[in-house]
Amino acid sequence: MPYAFPIQRSSGSELHPGFQQPELFRYVKERGIVPIGYCPIGSPSRPERDRTAEDVADTQMPEIVEIAKAHGVHPAIICIKWAVQNGQIPIPFSVKLSGRVRTDGKTCGIWAADPSYGCCRFNRPL
Image (cartoon, rainbow, N blue to C red; front, top):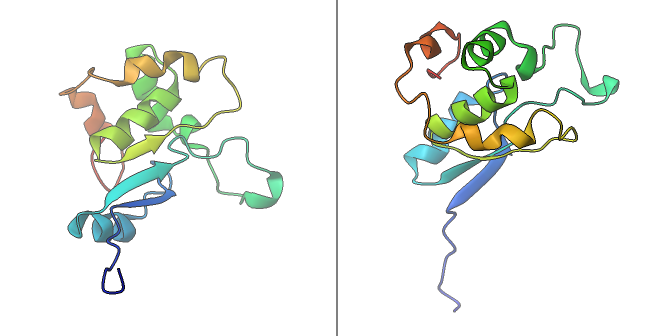
């Protein structure tokens, strides 16, 4: 197939409420490429060398915590829901199974039209 050109159908990148990459997201969506969001809950346990003084883990962002409390779920679930609602395929990753992964099932099919998502200061609504 010397004249075949591969067409990119998906693009994996770090995408979460605290690191949205709007230009990249818009670029892939406009070209029909499916965005795959690596680390949709951010990196709350990343090494100290990779942090800055103003860093706040997504699961500790006040808006995320407020919505999670209102729905009785872990903040990680809100981050995953944000990714799904924005057209990403999130790839959840957690080294802590206790409170996050066990509740992932709550992400699908709930809060579809909840107005509390409007309280978030995100580039795209939650």
